[in-house]
Length: 141
Length: 406
Image 1 (tube, chains in turn red, yellow):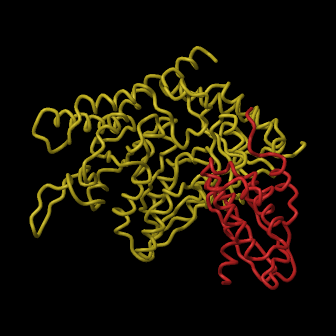
Image 2 (cartoon, chains in turn purple, yellow; image 1 turned 60 degrees about the horizontal axis):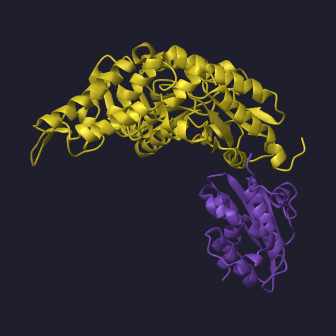
Image 3 (tube, helix red, strand yellow; image 1 turned 60 degrees about the vertical axis):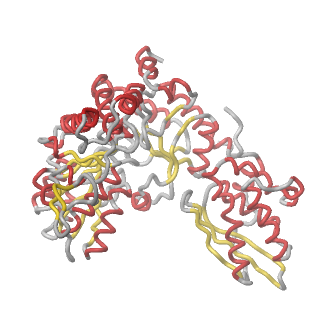
């Protein structure tokens, strides 16, 4: 059988997510739903002085949606809101196939989802966490 | 592969020329060469706008279209050829019915909808009920998917105007006793509409024997082209229904202040019709009849039995609905513990096995069974035991590929 894009990084984030739990003191919370896969997550962030000091998600969904949200939180916790939005912009452009290698390097592990751009039916899964974060952080502006 | 497997496979260009193991037949079937040729022949040799033409080629096209209607009527044993209305597909048939028959609904009326229904036999009724103040009453199935006639008997009463139910569930694969449901509906003066999208391609359906008032199905799931579907209705009911769409080809005469619509079925077929599709559908019916139901059903049963037995041996695989293969007619829906169905389908895809994942346009049923989404394999008689082996081999590996050791 041909190799799938379910590599070890992705399956590990899906099976043992670091950030799938509830957190105390979150001041941003938003539900994101992808009706085509039935992915449904609630993203919680704790933002102090424009810095994401903590974050987590809860919910259910396919491996891509779960791993993508988990890798996103790995990246953005400890970063400023502005930096998080910058990374989100790169991620969403990566899914459309519009990034440079240098930009993808900024995404670290999350760049493994680059090939999702060839699978239109799974794009919504990959971007769910990122879209949800963008929506809640830009609402604040 | 047996000689018969090879012979049937040769009929289908897609199966001949691709390495795909196609197990999504409940979504759409592949098309045999004879259907493709018939559609092509129509466009190459006698394409013209039917019904209105006063010249030979248009008359030929009209004859082909009306012959298709006669063949479909014969195929489902309708009393009259004009009880067959051509539509685009089952969904359009249901919308026609909901618009036209639904126009008479009044506040307090009830429509009984089975929880097993595809959205196409629920949403048109939900919308018309909301417009007219009628109520949807759910006909729930039992845990194994069985729709119990006794449950229906409790639900119907003098307010019931319609019972909407599928003959073969696109998720459970189970055949429902629509003949008994029709009796129960008729006892309270209600009508019954049967969704035949999954049943008509896989078993003989006789509308007189079932005594159903309406039956809807799609050509593309029964080896015919996309874009041609059927609504059968009893003539006495169709006569009293108002047209669905208005425009060309559905009138007797039009004055500035009044109009007389055409008779059934043409009053329901506004605009230029799909002759190529109808010609292809006739060829698909001929193709089914060339092998015969005995061959088709025994092949599909053999495949289903084989697949279910193999699936039962694999840990963490859960079959939805009945665990008895006799209750699965050409389709099996399942889940794998801890693995999301879209991930399951993606891994099958990497092995060139085409399966369906999601809610299969049946969200109320998924909710009723406590499921988020599922994976489905569905067969046609051109599938072989080798196709099932490819499916099973991949199925065994899925948890491992997702990082699970057992």
